[in-house]
Image (cartoon, rainbow, N blue to C red; front, side, top):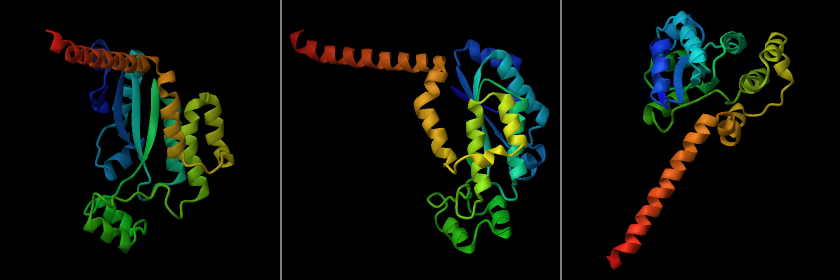
Amino acid sequence: MCSCSPVDLDRTTVADLARAGCFQVCVGIQDVHEEVRCRVFHRFTPSDRITHALAALGEGRLRATVDNIVGWPGQSDSDLEDVGFFYLDHPFPGRFTAFSLIYFAGTDISEEAARTGILDEKEIRRLEECPTAHANTRLLGKGIPLARRQLLLFLVVMQWLPRAWSRVILSRELYRLLPPLPPGLVEGLWTLFTRDRLDPVRGQYGARLMLAGRQRLAGSRGTRRGSPLS
């Protein structure tokens, strides 16, 4: 397993990774809008490089976890819907994730959050006093509208559904019928209970590691038991 930039993922690289025994890559997209990636996250990856990377993963059948950041200052429900539509238009083997933005003191994005009222003075002081312990996230904090919670939940759930269904649900905002469950909890349960079943390659890899560990442990015990007799 490894982490990759979408800039580095082309057909040749994907084929080399698969040949080397890689079964899954983690790819950081951050946002599906090129303007947001540049302005907010200072990531200057062109959109065509991202779509080519996802296409290469699909052609090479190399699984991926594609990471996105949500909750940045000024993000709208329409921006979040675009995340869903983007991955419906550019499918790949694996799944995409939506991580909430973490604020750190002294960064441009934290200053923007303070100017727009996302972070108040008390939260800014806490970040300045102890940045790592008080790194702030407001994805599911107070004041988040119910529709936003439901949309974030749907971005998790839609990956279990046929793409045609998901497109209709997004277009008609039918995700507003979902219960207000925490999306992180739902995704965590999915990862815990079903990920290896949905990914037999990873399951086989985990099984081989467990078997090798047990054999090594049994061998060390046998050596300890046999040493007094030698």
